[in-house]
Image 1 (tube, rainbow, N blue to C red):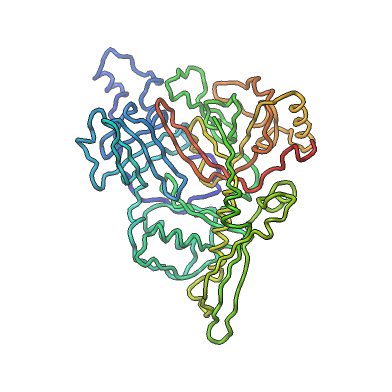
Image 2: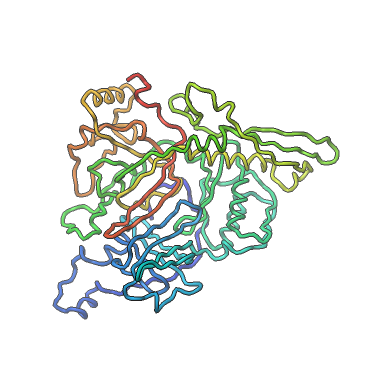
Length: 513
């Protein structure tokens, strides 16, 4: 089990079954003796089990395993609501001519966590959505996580209850687990799934979910077969803190002689590009800032009016209703951060608004079988989910880190080279004045001894970070919106993530430092 305290907690365990995977034993003393009695045994650094799933993905189609040398590239994509896989192989041994694949065959994936004593491996079966040949013996595969019943058109009714409870019913029906950062919602109503697939039903239910005016929701199935129902605003509002984890040295899986080198150390889950953390599961290899603010503002406006005509219940006169949804911001953020409302010295956000006309709505005693905030919640959820995509940080991790999960809140510590001593001293003084010169992450610490306050396994803090400047704009707490595991030969499996931040710091140059 992980020693990380999750904010999204498990409420129901999955009962769905995946195929068994078997790899030929080439490591036990009996296997070594049978193949080559004279060969020495016990050489851990050359063991296949130290590489499988970590240095390269383990991929089967039914019972046919593709070797590392046959795989060209691989991606496990968890940006959408359901995990997908795509990979390319060179089938030099013509396995595809012998084994298919046929209708109903599955792709089986195994990924091993670097901290395998505290983390569960990823083990997913995928339906094959496409297979395309290329070249003389190449094949490209695409697959979608196999959850029987998720895409079947289902005729099912759910008695009057909350979306929170109805989603648990769906999870149990699909034999998958259920996890959430909530315990209840305030949106009781009868819900119907009239011969539509449950994937669409989940979308419709979550899009109209309501707890209060300070909540908005999303859903996704994680790589461990849990249906996650997340109050996203809650994740942006969590207290700033770091979680204890095992920081692992991924290079050990590449066949390094471990010797006296530690495989892992206790540390904090702080993602950083500090060079002394290279080859660990917290090291950021590259990063880029992405901005879609203008696109979102043009398509969605800075707020949106919900308009409809309430026809009444036959005893009262109908009325025209117009309410607006102003996207949420973190309480207190307006005092020291930049809100996503355009330029600070302009009020464009007051006039660039959108309108949603929803027609005539029944006003009878039962609300036309809608919960009281059904119409408002559809716009509340939509507007806020768009708003948080305005600006994001995309990062490439050198190693996998299974402590990280979608929609967790996570600290990031970014350094950049100092252009000159004057700039370095200027920002050092800024840290002191703002109280950000204390050890800890991500707010404190300019030198490598501070900040993350930890040393890479098998290594020590170097001097090359002493002339680096903490990037105050990019350093901070983010929410993980998407994860992608990637591999190209010779490996190891790496990790890409998109991190969201709703409010951003005021740049140092704007604070007269």
